[in-house]
Length: 202
Ligand SMILES: Cc1cc2nc3c(=O)[nH]c(=O)nc-3n(C[C@H](O)[C@H](O)[C@H](O)COP(=O)(O)O)c2cc1C
Image (cartoon, rainbow, N blue to C red; front, side, top):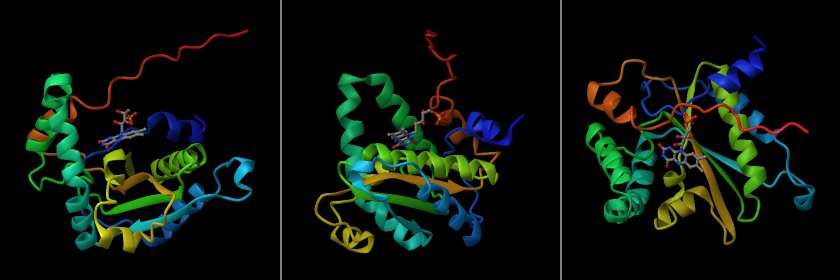
């Protein structure tokens, strides 16, 4: 099969990673793939910038920043969407390290751009996930991972400016093919089977 099609069609969100670091030259190629995404001509040039996080201590700071938002969102589902709440709590209980947001991924790429550049930045995110797949890496787009603006330290490190938004972030790492039983059970509820495309031909 065409290797690009294979990478696109075989990509699935990965939520359990080996601790093995991702080599810098691979991360650079993944960022470059993001940087080559299409962008709306309204922005005239690529609207994004990238922050690559590999430092586990900084990842812990990210988790501390995003966790209250995650917990608040999950708690609010308890009555409105009990199945989603149960699923989230199963995952919470499955992750011994309690990193239910970044899944202890060895690399996290923040795509940062003007708040109105969501479509272009999302295309950069997808390019990076497909590139990661082509290198045998797992990836996951974690919207909850963007909820870090409550931490002045994280805002400063990411150099977030007024009017900027975070897209992704994208988790990257070598997939853990044999996650613990608790994690396997939790993951069974996430990532639905794919439906055939709904397509009208004219
Ligand atoms: C905008 C967006 C936000 C997402 N946020 C999260 C998240 O916070 N945590 C997570 O585990 N997965 C997150 N995902 C991944 C989706 O759950 C996943 O893509 C979806 O279940 C389809 O599964 P697949 O990626 O394996 O095809 C997000 C995906 C998108 C597009």
